[in-house]
Image (cartoon, rainbow, N blue to C red; front, side):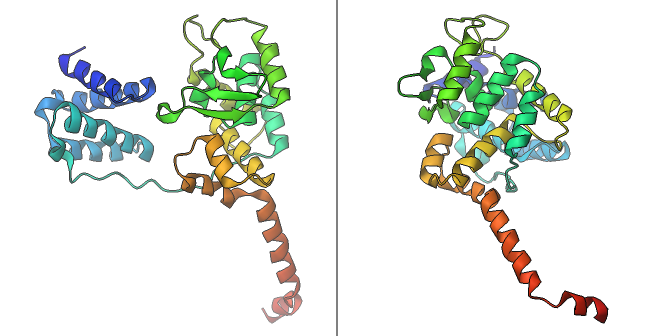
Length: 288
């Protein structure tokens, strides 16, 4: 590790950035430097702008695009002490999309087509709690409170902690799963005994299970999180509570689920149908 990278990592650690954030930032800065074949110390705003255009040509996601700018901004603004270098560079505007959700039969089929038990239990946990996949894989045995029926999300996004409700049925499933391996720390242990399972095999297992179940492409573990949030909303849970359970920083993010609330959409569909019944459609057809 070069002295600059070491100092960069230490600066991130001093600001209590999560290990996942540090790993992501270091990866982006390393790719930025490798693109020009020079240390970032010898690069500036013009090279960052050129690299942004390069990312657009590669058609990276807007999330990755903005992550890269955050990583480079921190490098120049904090580690190198030149915040003015990137003052005029702006973040990309990520398009807002309606979250995809599954109905309960689709969830059942997805889980039924997940062949590995560990993968199935983990996806079930995401569906029943709304955890992010990174939060679910990092669950430890100590995070489960069977008396209070809560789960402590000890390593949430932004290194924030929160409590989420735990249903008795999920608790039963988690206990049965833990008895198959009895790992002293991790609820979902990985191949290395000191680490939990990685997110990649879970994402792949979900994709394969969705294909076997005949679901439309695009069903991911995050889709199960969206589905959980939508079902809470349909059950009458208020938005502020849902925001806290999901760990959203702002209520604006939670409000996206109001656009996919199925009972409201069905009610709107019935209203539209009633409105159409008032129109003289037979006469309109004849007039054509």
